Length: 130
Length: 121
Length: 93
Image (cartoon, rainbow over all chains, first blue to last red; front, top):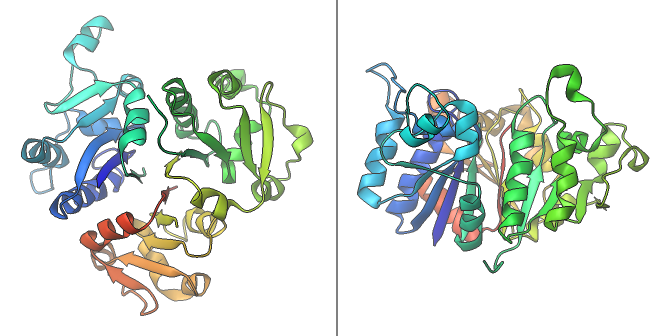
């Protein structure tokens, strides 16, 4: 089965992103696929390269990136939600005349159409709240 | 894109206290624009999105503009939980979304269970 | 039938109450994150007669012992619950 995960929670703020990671690992370990992880609302902060938790706390960003490398995950940040919250790639930062981009490697910025498309082709959508 | 799955957008939150109400309607419009036209259910505090609003007083854009765009994108009927309206003292007479028909849902459980996918906002 | 996933404490918001008001016969309920606080105490009486699951790591993390009327599950069983139910609805705030 193909799953799409929708993540609303900012990392290290609400628990949703952490729960989504645990669920994602279980989906993959069970032999199912993840079509897309769509970060919406405050969830777009998961794609910020500037998140720097204390060393004795888990690092959700590197966990997303490791999972992406191991399973070729599609990690998509909603571009409208990301612009509102200040998560930009270099070209968006330059287009919007902001001092720098801050999007982490492994993530993509895309429109809400990617959520619609994922809804059309995935067998299951699971939302992780804020 | 062919619409293979039935999709419900469940709007549960009041209009200005959290961005999720606005971002939910934006997602509904985006799905509809991609020919994945969802049904929309306003339930719990989501029914408060349907009231007339004047958010100029707090410097916000009126969320009703997003609501009023729904029929233009093919979401012509707005489903509304009857119990949620009653709990909040709202009668249908207080609600008018130009271009949209309102359909009361008496029994949200079986209604929700009839969809393939549910997005919660 | 629907799998409802609730993640908010029943003592801090209406998510569980709202979910139970939209519960159909045959639906299942999964308690995760702060909703595991519904897995013991008086809240249990509202869950009688329903298929209710609780994500055990979340309960253990919080020092909550899950009432025997509720099935404790791990993430792998959560995934299989998702394959057995459709749609999946989250109630989170």
